[in-house]
Length: 383
Ligand SMILES: [Zn+2]
Ligand SMILES: [Zn+2]
Image 1 (tube, helix red, strand yellow):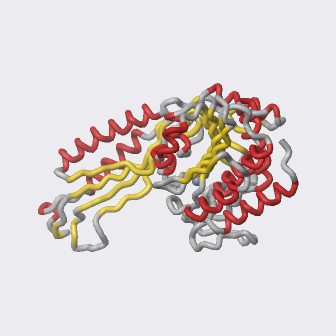
Image 2 (image 1 turned 90 degrees about the vertical axis):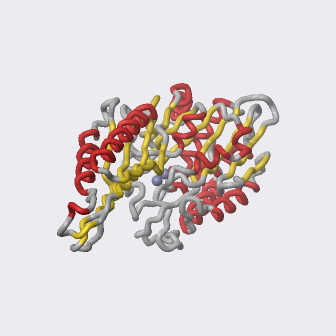
Image 3 (image 1 turned 60 degrees about the horizontal axis):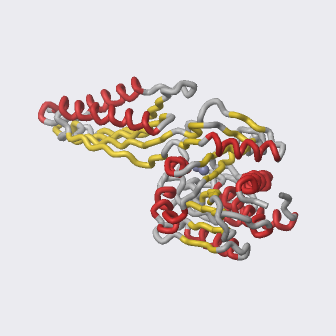
């Protein structure tokens, strides 16, 4: 599939317009509207917008029986101040596209161009633009939309650009591809007292120390092992800066990472038990909850094979990963419900890392991303 030079030029300027006008997770109304307008010109069978979220889908339906193949991109930017000074730099204070979701959305728009020219002969193709990837809420919101419940995808595919890898390299792996990630908030409630008389209060300091130590003991940062289980302390607060007061409350925050959902469940069960013991031993109020949960991405080998074939067809540099990635990806939730696979697309070895203030999506890989998706489409439904 070769894009016309003027089409590619249009796509790049569209990518730059998204980059200049970023919106954070859950707030992607203009991004969604702009995509809907551009998609409309490419004559999909229909476009459906989310009722309760900013997500949307564009459907290219052959009208004939066949598989439903879904390709997914993300809409949201991050609350990060951009430090770059190029022409398309973010116009929104404190917000910028530092994960390349502007590029991923543009790749799907490019795929829509190809589908307009070569529509499916059987089944249907669904282009899915999900909101709120960064907070791990958008995939769940899409699954709740009524149009999604009628969709019944046979296969779902997604990609992420990956700085630090050669440009256009295709990174694949069967089974676990990204970690299960969950953020834990623990709130301890004791009782303040005069700092000269801590015995009259309940100071949670000892419990804080025990929790930090236990989490450290449970953490096993060896990604080469199946039982990899990483617990990272991200924030701790105890009492306040008042020298006359013995602390009466504390808050601890951690991120947890495992390779599978069942390992995550096991770890969370252990933590629950442990916090019950802390509560009893220290007479503290203990509340805890999980937030920003990303389900592990599980790549179905047949779907990975489809990506592998596409890469071979296109003569791409293929890299079979031995270990999953330690980051979380909201796409994981889709793979818990449907068959599918996620892959990495090299964004250049010297490219600034994702979520860094000087990162920018490299437009050179737009045609590569489109071609990979298009080849996958052709294998299953195409002309
Ligand atoms: Zn990100
Ligand atoms: Zn991302």
